Each structure stands twice: as C-alpha cells, then as structure tokens.
Image 1 (cartoon, rainbow, N blue to C red):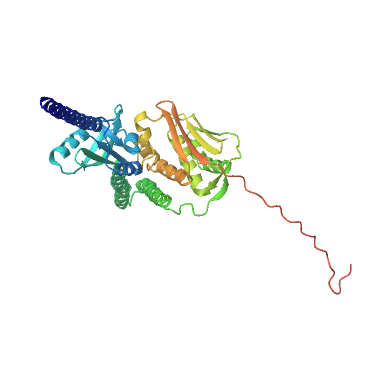
Image 2: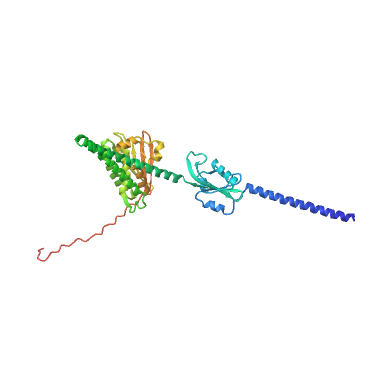
Length: 396
C-alpha cells in the first residue's frame, strides 16, 4: 500500500515539475519575442510600400526615436543620418505627438543635413502610427518660398523702376515748359527727356520680352540656325559702343556649330552678354567671344576684363532687376533685366548658362545649348534649257 502511494506521489511530483518547466519555457519565449520586437521592430502592413512610393520625405520612429523606416526623400533632404533624425526640432514634435496623441502640422526652417549651413523650409506633419510608432511626413517648400519671394521682389522692383523714369519725364516736361524762352535750356532738357523716354521704352520692352519668354509657345517654330552667324550679328550691335570706349571685341574662329531655336531671341541673348561685358569693362580693355562644339554641346563664351562679380552675388546675377554696380548701371541705362532675359532664352532652348568671375579680374559667361544636325540641302533638279522658237513672221 505504501508503495502505491509513493508511485502516485512521484507521478504527481513529475507532473508538477513538467508543468512548471513548460510554463517557464512559455514565459521565456514571450520575453524573447518582446525583446526581438524591441530590437527588430516591424512597421504595420502597407507602410513600407507607402514610404517607398513617396516623393517627399517620410519617416517612421519607434518609442526610442530610432528611425526604423524611411523614404528615399528623407535621406536626400538630409533629415535622417545614421538611423537617427538629424534635427532636434523634429524630435521635439515627435515627443509632443506621443504625449498628446494628437497630430501636429508646422512650418519649420531646418539646416540641410548634419554638416550643412544652408537652410531649407519644410511643411511637416506628425501623427501616431498604431500604439508604438510615430509617422513623420515632410514636404520641401524651399523652392516655392523662394519663388514667392522673387514674385514679391519683382512687383516691388518693377514699381520702383517704372516710377523713376516716369517721374523724370514729368519733371523734365515741367522744366521744359518753364524754360520755353531759353533755347539752350530747352535743348538740354529735351535731350534728357529723350534719354529718359528711351530708357522707359527699353524697360517696358524688356518686361514684355520676359513675359513672352515665359509663355509655353515661346519657341513655336524653331529653326536650324548657324551659331557663328548669331554671334556675328550680336557683336555687330555692340561695336559702336565698344569703339567709343576704345574696347576691342575679339571673336574666335568659326565653329560651324548649329542649334535649333529662334534666331532673334538667341541674338538678343548673346548681345545682352556682350553689351554687359562692354559696359562693365575699362577703356582700352578687350572682350572675347568664342564658340566651341564639344560632345553634342555648343558653348558660347563671353569673357571680359572688367570689374568682376563678388562671390556672394554670383547666385543673384540672373535675378530680375539685380545690379552688381548700381551706379554704373544707372550711368549706362541698364535695367537689370538683361541677364534674366538671357537665362530665360537659354532655358527655352533646352540649355543652361554658367558664370565664373573674380573681382578685379573680369567675368566669363558660358551659354550651353544642345547641338543641331546640319540641315540637309536638297539638290535642285536640272531643268531643260528652253528652246527658242520663231514666232509667225520672224526670220531665223
């Protein structure tokens, strides 16, 4: 009897030990799974595909602010580095979302990457993603903000630029009326009136030209053009002014390069570059104009020995109404639209423009355009020579 109880007790003890061991294994397995989730967290289904498809920046953060998933845009914009958010402003917004549980949208100015000094403007939105994660979306609005600034500056500048010659015309007309009995004064005021009216007309024409260049049909009917002919025509328009200032314009050898485009617009663009080079050069200096064809790209280069451009102004020289030297521009009648017109002409022709300059050493502007194949000239068919026939009554 005692042996029976011992067997039952041993069996019960074995069952208890086995159950405890199984329970320990289950608890250990649960702890291991939780630890694995912390170390290797997984985003909810579908988020991977959404982030991969985003053109803007998208980031998923875990409770420790580790970046567990990011879109290519976030890396390109420098928001994420070494699996961490770079900017403390974004981390603070993530903390607020976790604390309140409410989505947040804000406009931020952030530096470009961990080592850059340049700033970028973002519209960011953060919201909870499930119970553990935070989703951050950032839209880069830097370019839109810059264009809005350019638009505001353009309206302000054009008002100022038009106001000055209009006011001058009014004052000169009034002075002309008061000096009606003084022929010398009349001639002087009339000359100045002509100068101001010409400046006003030139400014108005350039504004119209800019508006036309921004239209989609600016190059409705492009033609196959000789770049050498365009350069020659543009230089000829500046020779009189250059000779008056004893400035020599030197043209390089002919290249035979051709481009598709509008001949009048391209001539205006090259002429603006040459005219600028002449206006900002000292007496007795040289301006060089050359054309080079390389790997399907036509380069038109205008080099001067003038005052040069400061490095801080190089990014602004193509802005409307921007002048490197205000006093010289006023003296030469410059409107500040010349280089802006050049930029739009070149862009409408599928090219770009670059500038190199150093104060005191001059500047070099390079227009790059895609090459066009030489036009095919069809041979004229040989026509039979007419045979003379005698009319009735004529003698041969």
